[in-house]
Length: 248
Ligand code: NAD
Image (cartoon, rainbow, N blue to C red; front, side, top):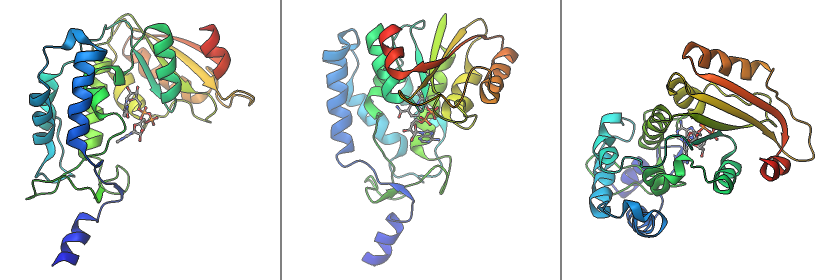
């Protein structure tokens, strides 16, 4: 019986839930609401943690819906300014550094983005515990897993409530800097509001020539998605990472 149980928990292809997930969520919540953004002090971290857990505990890890996260989202709606947002795709560390330098914010600067950053989580039907052996992988197991749906809901809301100029850092060292299948491509770009301006920065690894540019086919695709939505578009390319951080 033990062997069967174990192989059941071990059947997914993605990393298992992060050990001490609940404690990490709680610690991060207190850190964020009391130290990092004291203007969110009134948030109830116990309630937020409970809402996070009950979104996925005891449920089929491949049957996540946006609805499952509704209560959590309602408890922790972002309070970051709508006109200072930075999106990214394959440039996470650079985007975080850039945002910090310029007083801008990424999704990981909102309470829920901060709580879940770099963590993994999933449950198991009929069990009160997290599955620390394995969780579903987006490609190999199912797209509607709890982690993917979480980031999709959060990313969608972050993008659709943005205003003014939104910046996005794309990786100019890739052949296709704009990836239609990424969360930025599938969820964020198509949910920007009309009249928003999207400022695209194509940043490449220092010491190497860029592989994609503002006139390349992947960025053209992005431009066409945006023009259908009346989102204005500005693009700068040929920016080496070091130069970009220093000059921008
Ligand atoms: P990306 O391809 O660089 O992916 C970013 C991170 O999200 C990676 O850690 C990746 O493992 C994970 N990810 C991507 N697609 C996923 C999926 N379908 N299911 C689960 N995890 C997935 O860039 P992207 O996909 O364009 O996402 C970046 C944008 O979306 C950012 O603008 C950000 O606002 C938001 N986002 C943030 C995180 C995060 O881990 N902090 C995760 C997803 C999305």
